[in-house]
Image (tube, rainbow, N blue to C red; front, side, top):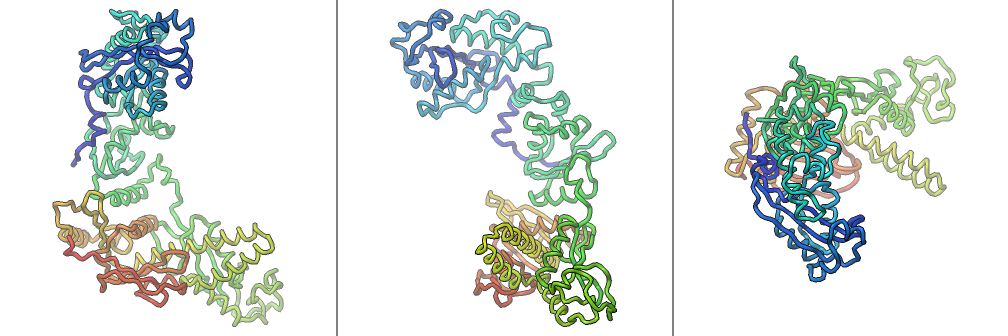
Length: 595
């Protein structure tokens, strides 16, 4: 299993506590919230590995009155602050002393709140991103009832600090430093040895999460698929990430608050990972693994294993019917897919109303015996009533033809008629009817675009495409009939042309293109191909698909290697063939010798 280099953030997180620089700080203030009160004194101790590296102490002119009870408690009087630096100057000097060290304070939100407020008020850019609260650490590390409270004076006495807190900044910072070191000794018995360990320890992390952080050890740092597995080897949860180790580690931190994930972690015994060449390959592998294993903690597993489609029934007077197919199927005669049977039926009713197709369910004979329609639509004249002896069969055949054109991708007439009706609704202030019609049209157009994209992808044969990885390299994928069959990555030191050829050869050797393909996988691949940075290296069969609103086409032709555009009109759409009248033709072919 290969692993990559850790990022700077990960290196900092994995740094042993003995190598981390801490600045323990304490403030004396005029009292009250940071937005209103002022700082009167700053004291700090810089330590690393148990050794003191330096100390900082200064009085501060808060530029406001000091209440009498604060003077009595701290012993700091206005006369003592007459020549003291301003808040801006004192905080700036402290920032130079602290640098990028981790700030530590007892009841840190209070002290650090004053520093943050001062930085914001005086436009100071300094403030570290990492901090630690010794009060919170004590509440987690000490046994229940071991101390009566977690005040600094109580903890200093409990740990026999040589310095007694006296409400003066430097003395209190020294006492906090002693408490910090004693707490570090305590948490070491819990396996806390790095800053990442400590951050997880003081966060709201369950015992099970802390105990199983080691499950992330040794996982790859690049893209891949990870699987939490129980003691019997059953997959519990399957996920994917661009950095598997970092993502799995997050399940054992305070960032993970989902109850079902906490439950899953309590059951998991190990994490298995599959390194992938590209993020897209990882996402595809995740989809396939979830489909096969149906892990109970994946919400995707709860999705229906079937999809719904529309098609014209096989009878003398056909009507639109909803049919169910397995998730792996892409029926030749179907139109969809739809997320549910209800959505398919709603689309069928809308199209039937717009074209005059019948919605009654009885199967009709070639020569009906009835003399009058048995439904309201027939009596109202919105259907040619093929269920009657005198029904207009030619008119109904025209309705069927209009539906067939819509299913084939020609939405121009439907969209034009819909726009006319919406305008009419708007003029008569029937805004709810206009909004309903708009939503119905939008749903039909969306299904049509998706259907023709997927069918074009399926019928295109083998597609080789590449996308920049953001680091001057290429992510290369081989797609066969809508299924990812190979993926590779070409770095700056590799020949992209050779990598693409090797990927094609590998895919042919494995002959995996004949395996079933899910609609979800095809949709994911289609979205990737539509990304603006994707470059097509080769396409076995020229393909075209709708690009927006049923009026434009995206087309590729393997015989062309230049970028060209023809005139754009709102005509027919959705034919998975070469360039056609009224189609926007765009070639995005990357020659194999382009590197």
